[in-house]
Image 1: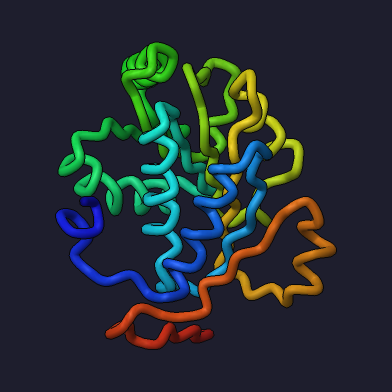
Image 2 (image 1 turned 90 degrees about the horizontal axis):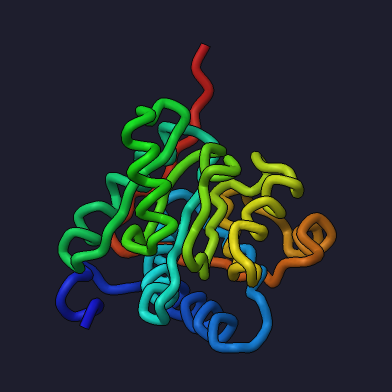
Amino acid sequence: TFFNDHLPFELTNAQKRVLKEIRADLGSNAQMNRLLQGDVGSGKTIVAFMSMLMALDNGFQACLMAPTEILSVQHYNGLLELCNELNISIKILTGSSKTSERKKIHEALENGTLQILIGTHALLEDKVKFKNLGLAIVDEQHRFGVAQRSKLWHKNLCPPHVLVMTATPIPRTLAMSVYGDLDISVIDELPAGRKPIKTVHRY
């Protein structure tokens, strides 16, 4: 029903393929550790959100950690409308979040009423405790150290499934050596109607 009622566009074949790989991981008895690689505009965020929905459907919480506040806010604003339509509770936690708001988020996380949390390194603080974290998504993994990713794992008694996203093109052979503990999914198809991404240097 999410496809029919709430998704205002058709997923690309690459997105569908990646979602099948993620669904297979989440349905297995092993912890998912998957790298999702795709250019800017390839649709990684909607794949991440649909992965979160799989976790939520099974009674778990999900989080998405980004390296900067700007990127966290972008993710939050992009997902807020979809969450509101689906009656899913979502909040954002960053270094500039007010103390009163932090307290509400901490309480809602621990009692399970908060389903999705977006944020920066603030997610790694000891006070941030989940009731039942099932999926942890890390955007731009190369901006975080292994120890930081490991800290996310320990936010739950059972390690959550982990999805790492990057827009940095990494040859598969190099990715296997850098991210040896991760399975690799690639979105190699841009959605229809997307303009080519331009990278310019101005001086």
